[in-house]
Image (cartoon, rainbow, N blue to C red; front, side, top):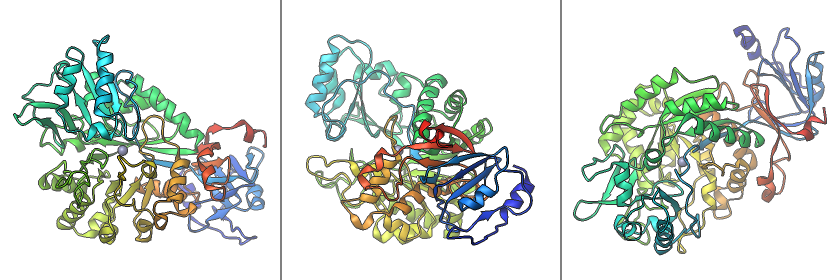
Length: 556
Ligand SMILES: [Zn+2]
């Protein structure tokens, strides 16, 4: 779109016809390419929260208003889509997902996944059975029962699989276990040094015990390095699923792979949605070379294809309550005296934060424990005034550790929180809730903390409407439940804000990208249990159709 067009779009004309006012560019414009009429338009924009119709030109929102007003803008070349009274929403922004990181070989069948997952004995029995016939990598997902079992896993696995390489992984990340043959095949010897942000587990004699923690957990790509072709297949599948849910932007947390291979995979997949790739700080960063993470971003950003942006880096500041390594104020209930741990020293965290202030990209931080969150906010206060942080918009991925007494501080420091309501669906482990306290949602919004939503899903668990259901239902803590509008705003405008793109997308407002979806049902009013069944009937990215359901096409 030309600059003159943008300038014209800036001006607003409110005609005040009927309940819906019209927002439209002033001056003469060509007939819009696409009109969506007869809709309930939720705009996520305070200037005009609801409307009936939208006009789109050059990939942008040209006008928002009543059916009559928008139809009047049409010309002979305009395509008009009758939404049949359905809900039209800004395209959803999936603000946190992991893709292209499957186990390197088909995983063993394990009972009771995801929670509590197999017992240690069940996991060992499954490995023993497989080791009778397999000499190649034996892999499997495990749950918290194995992750929290502090036996020497290298020795235990060696006893049942002395000649086969074995790799067990927590389905949520944050737990990796390898036996001796596995370590040998990976070329990992006793002299290996701990990477930045992670460590190798060792027994009382200092010998590797088979556990890799946090940034040391790059086992999967060591066994089977990612290729652009395989990533393209994973990204392409995800794009199709997301298009059917009305998702138009994807924030990819790029764990276990380089920016270079991910960008090559996206080129092959041909981006349909807008991708923002959050570089993985720990990826191949040599020890004590934090600045290297930003150098990689600078180089990669220049090669990003259309519709793809590079952001980050993302660092993992602690673990999670599932394996009990997130840093908590109170010790874990079943493990007196154990509070979890930080992945970085104060000095390292300061360096990360100072680099973030100096560099243009957004820093994303996985912070889960309340004590780790306290530490982060305290160090931010020490390093720079609140105004500097507000301009920087530090992303906290998983804001579970923001407590009542740090909410105001977090708001003042301008952090943006990406929540994953899917975590609310996790059942207890051995009778104990995994999240010992409630995940804040409503209290964050009330304090003015910008909120975005992501699924935190792997390859197949990304349904945004399940996330919306969990955030609005929140039966465990009704006081933190969001209204449907607030949840949908977090999923749209909130996601765009979290990546600094709120002036370009995330709302149905003049001049913004025409990223929107016509949904199969009104997610603002249907019974809450029906939300996960929602699909998109029409998904537009920059005004281009990336998914269209035959049911809607027949109504034109
Ligand atoms: Zn995640």
